[in-house]
Length: 126
Image 1 (tube, one colour):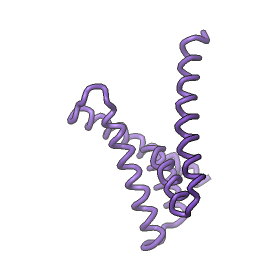
Image 2 (cartoon, rainbow, N blue to C red; image 1 turned 60 degrees about the horizontal axis):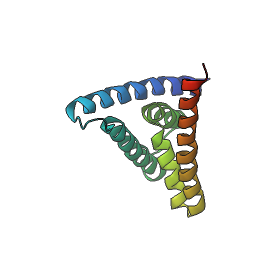
Image 3 (cartoon, rainbow, N blue to C red; image 1 turned 180 degrees about the horizontal axis):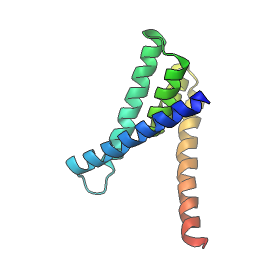
């Protein structure tokens, strides 16, 4: 039950941070219709999950509760792309190159396929 609470609180913090960052970057650095704010959130999320993950592996001891709050809650609410990036990096770091490639391919193809299907169904079902 505590993990659910930590994920919920962290998710709220991360989601609010994402919303604010996308809004600020979108106003400050307008580049047409390119989603620069989303790109910035994804890159920052990837950097942050890798940085904290490396610190936790080599330098500091994070409790299980703090890991859930930071990784699943805050960073999960901020961007799920960071989890995808970190999981892919883990496969590469542990020499599971086929799994890394399959993870990238599956996320892109299935994710975009789900977008296409959802878009089509949303437009044509009702």
